[in-house]
Length: 86
Image (cartoon, rainbow, N blue to C red; front, side, top):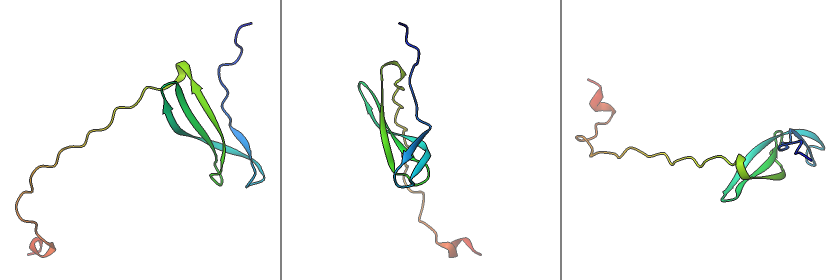
């Protein structure tokens, strides 16, 4: 039998703190060699409501680290606010 559904993603889950079904946010917890681990958080009170692991082809590529520009030597003595007012 062919696969009918790809993957499920929760839009609302029951929150025991709010005592009702609430919309959820998905937060990336870990990037593993086999997939990614996400946590579902209540969008109202930020309580953790569950986890989801994505494995296989849907795993996103790791982002390259941003490089910071190297600071050069300081140019001259630092002037305070009085040095700017004339």
